[in-house]
Length: 249
Image (cartoon, rainbow, N blue to C red):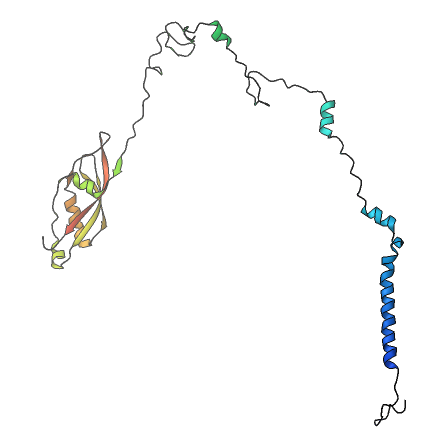
């Protein structure tokens, strides 16, 4: 041992460390193998009773109780509802056979007999019970329904329609001041034409103030044909345009 601790040892002394290590590994392997093989050899030591109980199938469930509705239906008597024959009811089930019935009135009376009608002798067919012979003067069957006529006081028409009704036209006189100032353009007037075709009212819609007075003075002398609606003359509401040009002055 003292020789092994020296650096200049000649390894003359041989130890048994390698053999001891090999024997230790062999013994440990034998012990582990023995512990693994014991449960495989002695199988009777397992709890057989517990294994049987776990592998056995559970018993089937008990049958369900009968439904309560069937028991109540057997116990309670069936009550039939009394239906009124004069009223319509929704059928609860479809009948297997359809019974053909005939009306008593059609079987008793002949087919060519005219239907019975109320009223008095000599009255109008289909009249009301309690009427008079020959009807009443101005009754429902003899008098047409009168439709009231709507009286229109005034209607709005376009400028093109009003120009087609024009029968007499007076050209406006060009104002001298406007001519000297070289003012020209158009004047738009709002006019109301009566049932007789005469201009009743004029209002300036647009235009130069120096030209408006001359336009109004000329349009007041214009005449139109009456505008007919449903065979009657009515007043019309329209616009009138008057042109002023220096070339035509």
